[in-house]
Length: 80
Image (cartoon, helix red, strand yellow):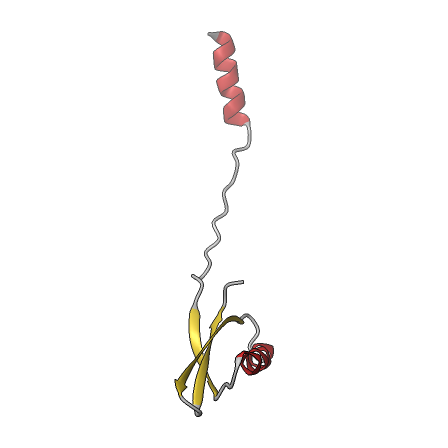
C-alpha cells in the first residue's frame, strides 16, 4: 500500500507530456484559365510558367478545353 502511494506521488510530480495542435487549411484545387492549350506538352509548359509566378500551387497534370481553339484551363492544387 505504501509503495503504491509512493508511485502515485512520483507520477504526480513527473512532468506531463504536452500536446500541440496545428491547424492547417484543407487542401484546395481550382481551375485556372490559360487561353488555348494545343496538347499535353503545351499544357505542361504553360502550367510550369504559371507555377513559377504562383508559389504554393502546383499543377495536378489535368487540363481541359472549355472553348475549342480559344480557351482551356489547368487544374492546380496547394497540396503537395
